[in-house]
Length: 129
Image 1: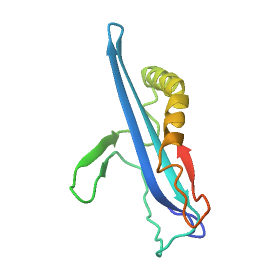
Image 2: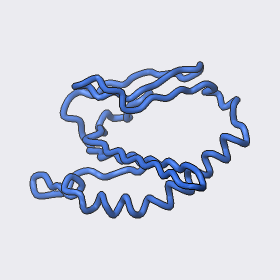
Image 3: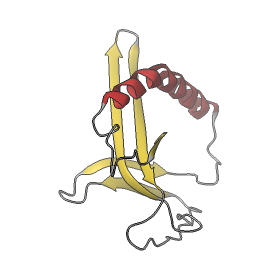
Image 4: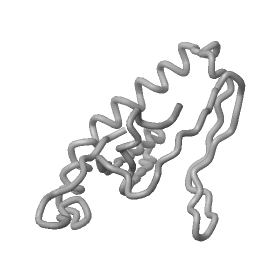
């Protein structure tokens, strides 16, 4: 179930930052996603039953233009494809992610959207993923 127990949490906004560094040593790619969440829904929230027990494709699409922002696939949702190569790639990614995280958070704190206030008090929180 992809909902909160009391239907009181929703995503207010989301930011995505990606970088690719190409040099003589190779290519390094990192991404950071940040969600700003609020405690109560303004409209009725509904849950979605989603059982990932078979291979599937997924995508994130911008509604207005229909532009696909991100696409991926899950081939083995049961974890059957947990090879050493995949683990090594994830370890490399996480090292690069944490190396760049502090700079990104610093940039976001300077952002007008991050520091916006509504009704005299700061709303929401952020989640780095």
